[in-house]
Length: 113
Image 1 (cartoon, rainbow, N blue to C red):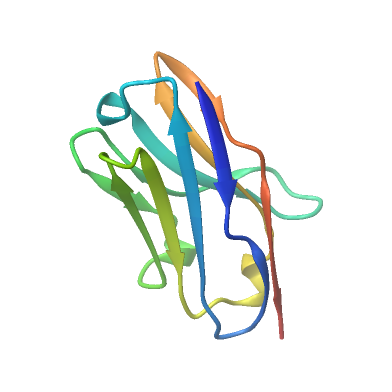
Image 2 (tube, rainbow, N blue to C red):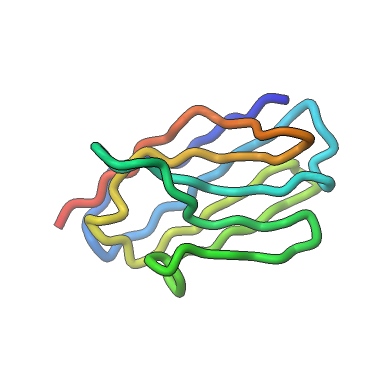
């Protein structure tokens, strides 16, 4: 299983970014998906997750601002991030649960005030 994340960058507060994570080497439809982030000096935390069946969870801090989605045909997961805040700054990682957990490489998001 391989994951390739992209879409990070630098934006001002209030801006938007869309992260993508393309997967290979698995039956994507059967996988649980998640986005995590790690801010400098902090532990990695769950931002959003979508189950195989479509159930979705968000961290309270990103509800109504972030949207997780999946495209099973393209084997890609997305994280649409709107109204970004400086506190959203960090390295974002995609995660797939498929028998065990797999991680993509991080993509850096920097939000300036």
